[in-house]
Image (cartoon, rainbow, N blue to C red; front, side):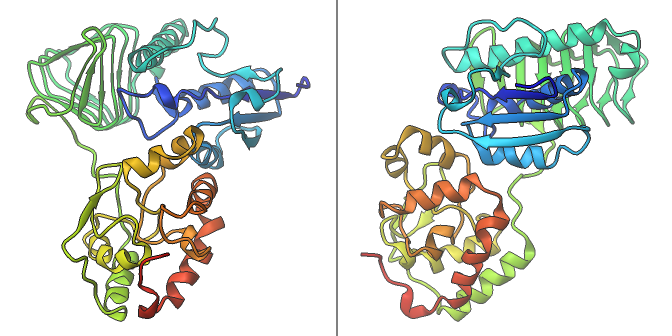
Length: 380
């Protein structure tokens, strides 16, 4: 590493994420006002670096996408996907804790992984509380905070947050943007993700509230189903199928003559229930198209596979494929592989999941354009 270049290797703890089941790698988890990776970009700028070289094994496509959108930092970023973090340069700094702070031992399970994120956030809050303009930085834009609410430092409140009367926020509380805290709430040592809703007379201590799912770090309890008047998420479903893809799916359904799944169904590893048989390749596809125009399945993505098909792959490939969206048609189709049962399909799936969409989408679109009803038969 030269004086102007900072090498960072991001943690690969996807195998430990057995509690939260986040679609994002640990480096992209929100900690305070931004994700861990962005904290390290701040550090690089403050250190006078002009270039940051980043090495990652866990969901590299997600890392690359975030870096492409990270235009606020006056610094050049170079990204390299590696098979495992030991493939990164030995001199690279392990970006698994808050920059400038001594890193504790690595986590060993899913709850310790969440604990680590909480610890990083508390260290960041303590650091921010020492800044002379802390009271200006600790509350975002367009917030409505009732005058009878009590704020106990350190805390961070994102943009467009509403806090009702008789609330007690802090210490060590982070309220994500767009959240609504109704009134008479107590929140300490807790993180609420963006667009969280907390009903009146509700208290959170040492908790993570992520998209309506509550994690109690003290009691090691995850609660997925809570009465919506107590705790919920105001965020809309993140799966958005563009209308042009929905209309295209309807056109394809009519052009390809509809489909008969013969009453069979299977469940993909992510819980999606699909008509057909996971080994039948193209024979299933037209039966999936109605799910596209209903907005329940993307037109383009990785081929759906069962949990057994996923777990038959190499562990590193599982981590890459597990967090990529599934769809009716994939890049593998354009390469002649139409079922996860084909040994070559996983190679193309990893390629698709690891690269920007503009790299692999054109051949997939061309394959669909040329698809004829005569091709809709089980792969051999």
